[in-house]
Amino acid sequence: MLENQATFEKYSLRVSEVLLSVNFQEVEQILSSLKETILSDGIIYVLGNGGSASTASHFVNDLVIIAKRRGVNINALSLVDNVSILTAIGNDESFDDIFRVQLEEKLTSRDLVFSISASGNSINLINAVKLANEIGACTISLLGFNGGALRKISKYSCLVPTEFGEYGPVEDSHLSICHYLAASV
Image: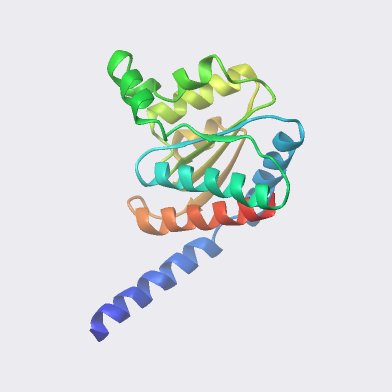
């Protein structure tokens, strides 16, 4: 039993170390962009795959509910939450376009596309960010490892720098950052 506690202690220390390595100015820039979108009555679209999809859902829940409790309405949508839409687009068109297709007829230049990805190399996220950039919407990516392609094409990003494959510490850090952002808007 002590061996398991020591393992958890090491993991907790690693998550703390990773979180403290984040550039705090990047987080504050994201917060500023979120506030700007909210004030301009834009929509915040949040997307991710796998564990990042659950963080996307959680983040939208927190943005909307915390703000509502404070008397503020935030228009935020998670593009990962409708399985029927995701599988229809994936089947009829391509999994690479499950987010882009959802944004095509809705996205405006007042809106914000918020991608969450450990690798930063998911084609479906890249395609959505490229579309958003073409329309002139704000693009933000919360990333891990070295940031991948999304780090290069997003207007703003926040990198949780780790070795490739350290999904747990990256995803835990992403959720912590999202908690901070939701509480701060």
